[in-house]
Amino acid sequence: MADFRVGTGFDAHALVEGVPLVLGGVEVPYPRGLAGHSDGDVLAHALTDALLGAAGLEDIGALFPSGDPRWKGASSLHLLAEAWRSVREHGWELANADCVLIGEEPRLAPHRDAMRAALSRAIDVDPALVAVRATTTDGLGFTGRGDGLAAQAVALLRR
Ligand code: MG
Image (cartoon, rainbow, N blue to C red; front, side, top):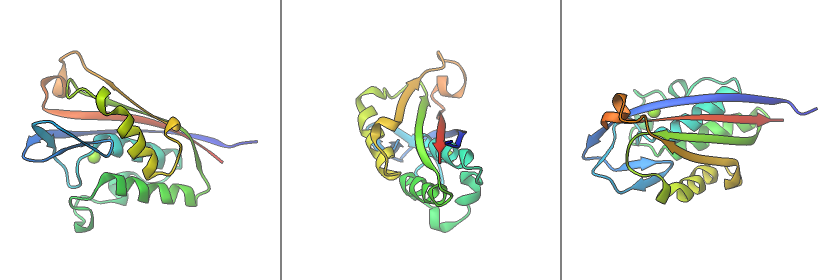
């Protein structure tokens, strides 16, 4: 009988001037971008942590410490691919993942397909297995004020 494991991931980064906005591996035209040691891609980070959590592995911060110069400015798709490699090495395959961006803007819809394609390419699975959606917090909290963006993800693995 198949063995299934579920994992969740959450991440948030501040929106700041002077850096590109990268979400789900896609550069989105917007006046501000996400601060971070890597490119700050909250969607990729949440998905990475969901996959690692489902496999019972350490979190993204343990695998890619923010003080490590190797990951400075790193593409989060690269971190996602690296994390996925360890998950695969433990014998897991992806059943599906669902990623939700939390913020008032920018609008995600025009970039959704490109994000699904980029995230699924990084982990070498069918884009149909990786959903990318968005929600607002109705103007409430740090995402509502536009101080930052957050993301959550859930992933189901099987072997
Ligand atoms: Mg992060």
